[in-house]
Image (cartoon, rainbow, N blue to C red; front, top):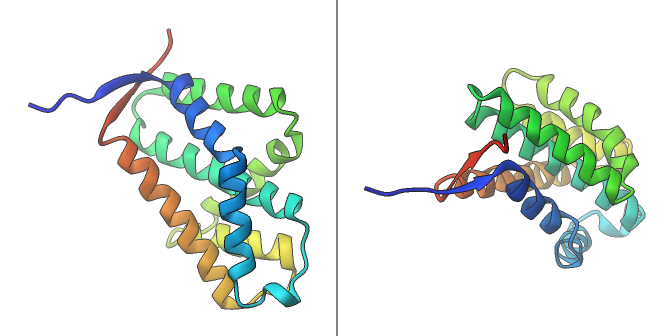
Length: 162
């Protein structure tokens, strides 16, 4: 029988958020941005780009954990509190303010909320100058994040602190 390693919600969230805000991850995203077909025509600051990508990924994290542990309100509440505190401690109030907008985008489609999030990123960053190809690249990136988090849950089981 296979046993999953038990890990606290706060430990899991800290690991995920530390990676999300790491210089290494930022470089991966910025290189990806520069490789996109419309890059030369779409000038956007790296800071703004990273802020939106991180907000979208935090919303993805929240969604996957919430779906996985739908019957455990304590895990959801602890995760939400941890994310809020983490963003406060790292002076990321702008990202905290974006989270409800990404949550709304995610919930706005019964068919593909991830596509709606990708469209929202594109509109926020590029207004109407963004190609469908870039929207699909954002969508693929977000689905990749979902797959990565789901893969975590094949190895670990979250447990609430108290």
